[in-house]
Image (cartoon, rainbow, N blue to C red; front, top):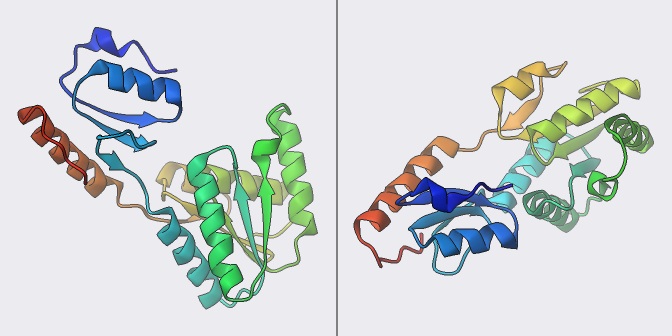
Length: 207
């Protein structure tokens, strides 16, 4: 949950907004703000280009010779759903089909049960298959479930994550391949915009 921001006495904020309650607290704070995930009226917004990410992944798999594709998503997370829609849409426009597993529908089951459900789905996929996970953490889930299902990675299921988180990718066996996001440049740009907004109260910036 978001902390009591009013007690921080901040002059500006960059915040990841995931629900309406958090959005209202940012607006009530009344300071220059840049948001991530949820866009607020009149506030600059920063986000990954989910369409570009998905299409990059699809082209990568096609270049590697794959004819079968899958996506593992958390459908209750907006960016994951956007990536799923873009990945499926791009491949379907080229005449391919995509198998999608939505773990978000299974919120009330344990971690072990979720991995069992995922491993069962992986067994049903026609192979070899190129699988895009919503991010690296989800990619790690897939690789672990493949081991549980006795499915070979990358021979049967080639897994691609997003974020290129070295810690997560290195923890996977085999190591997870991942799409790199230029988060550092995005952070610098967001900080620069926030600095301008703080220096010029009332200024708008629609970048």
